[in-house]
Image (cartoon, rainbow over all chains, first blue to last red; front, side):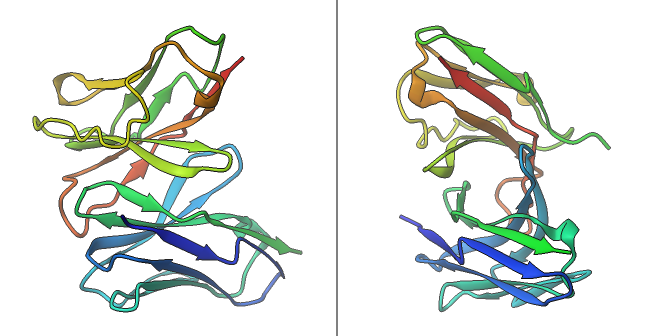
Length: 111
Length: 116
């Protein structure tokens, strides 16, 4: 059974800092890995999807990497802004076609 | 274009009542998923529909939970004889194929269910 872990569970940083969120998974037989953002009381917004054959994806200030063999992914956020404050969820797409989610990292960027 | 929509946005019910939650996926998406997000449990998969195939019900927590997808589009999640532990946010997602490595799941805003 796939298990996904995210570290840290919560993070508070001053505006402008670069930061890294970590995700690890136990079963490397994945189709892809997605990073989502969730604002309080809202649904999930897809940020980046990395296919199993890829090493990284970039979108604006976000960069996600994937090391499938070691079961790890990182989400790098450059020059953080208060608007980046949210919960970030990592999810792995397995052969069972559902996503298995990590517990999330609650990010607070202070002005 | 329109995203995934869900209704109602909030539902308060009494223990023992039945509830129906609705999901309208993105037009043209063949795959539809239901997840549940509750305190202490995180986000967990419930059920998956892909085209005309039999649904994957492996995540349903009990036989009080059922779901159907009519005409390959709208889906309804039904919870019978609701219990307080059913209180959660129920999220629906859809994706284009459900089977490709580039397949992105798009989520609706969720239905917050409170069982008193």
